[in-house]
Image (cartoon, rainbow, N blue to C red):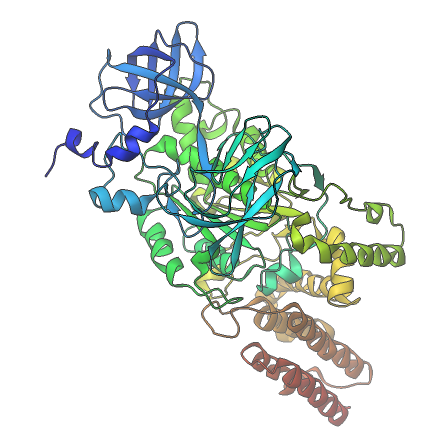
Length: 634
């Protein structure tokens, strides 16, 4: 086996590209795991530093007079006091440009496949690799010409990054307005100059951005459209808006990872950013091995063509885990700025919070509840705040979104406004708005939702999908508890559903929830005296609730057809179930026996529609058979 110092030079061309003359050099004073203290270092908060003779990457997190506290993103075993600490003067940043899609990174954007080729399965300390491939040439096609005046964030050209996906090359937000004096067409690497402005500023296809700083936008917008997931319980009862936030907490084995994979595969987002933050190695291995083989149902091409994976398993350095969610958020914002809808999956924020707790304890900070730092809620809020629907800097200056829907006082006015927004929405596909939707998984110990991370997450997210271990044990998947879950986007998204799906959508949803809540009350009585002792109407409620649970809420993620359910199919299933409810109540009014109603066969045919592409025909036939059967028992 090679020694450490031999392996740290295994990619010398990449290390030399990274190395710059330090602006200040100090020396190590104290080491406590991933937290070290340096003296004699001239630094600012969040400066990236190089620690020790092996130049391990770290970040300044506290300054106390002459002492500088640093969190190191790599294993600190073996480093000693007195070794040098170099300040680069830069903040922790990611490299953005063509080549992000299909990539697999660690928490600080080192490409794992590149490092694996160089040194095998175990990453050695002190080794860097750029986030983008600096040698690959991309076919750049300009959309601007010589003499055009351009501003920060404006699109100057296009690159086909993966088959079917166009990467828009934008001016960095930090650039000043200028006139193009030279713009080139052809094949270039991400570091070669493609454009020159009259103020002598040069532009490449790559840009860097600090991960802890949100990227600027022209305007933030209220959410107006749902993120369609194809999962009935999410789309029907607890929708999340594009540009919104959602939390999916649950104990081990309840289905967090499968649910997030379903969301990644089927949601109508243009880009998926999946962050595996501190998860077990076997779970992350499953994601890394399965995702490259998944097919995008929209295009038939590999799902990885529009996916970025960030893997930071539980055995990786704890400090890099804390940075991984910011790395993912920055990459998501970059694609949002091109005018795309991005869905970011963070699995799981509990591991991120545990990393903060470990670092906080080494800093000897006053602990909060259950040992978490007092600023836990603030950090979670700052992270979820990066979800938004926006008009990006790249959008044409003439674009203005109407906010009249907020002032609508009647359903009619709301529908009219929604139509106006839909008209504008046709242009939005051209990149005039973009969004980042953040869906964070939470892993509360023992499934206890009262613990600090879950409670802090609930305060800042508007959609709550509560996984239930008991439902999972009964093989009810997705194991979302419909009584504990909620969505605060129902009223906001009602005009969209009314115009896109049907004006009866919200009334149908309200009836579904009402029946499920009534069932929960009746189950307490059933456990004592049995269902046969209940009045006829209450027995009918239990039967209708069963149809809702089995035919609407349950969904097979591994079935070719049932894995995705369009909104119209969900609507027809709801209407068919409620049609049975209406006929049943009418039959009871006319003296029919509840035993005869419960024995009807037509209602069970709703299940066939779940697994058949011709669901409309099946559901219409089921309704017709219901009518015929009820006529016979009256």
